[in-house]
Amino acid sequence: MGYIFVFLIGFGLAVSGGVTIIAYLNFLPAGITWIEYFIFISGRMECYFLPVGMVLMAFVVYRYPNAS
Image 1 (cartoon, rainbow, N blue to C red):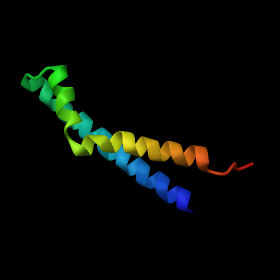
Image 2 (image 1 turned 135 degrees about the vertical axis):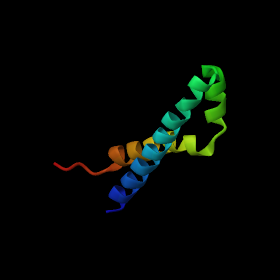
Image 3 (image 1 turned 180 degrees about the horizontal axis):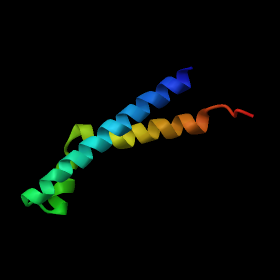
């Protein structure tokens, strides 16, 4: 039960971070360059939710007992 809970938390963080990164792509038509975009998202805390969530999900997938 605990593994499922950690997986769902990781999934929620990954979705939240991914949506935020995609939403910040709207700055590109406003005139900023790709380099400025990556510098901007590297300074935003909510953009780190994507890799943290993916690490949590990977941890659960590799640690979950075999079903067979």
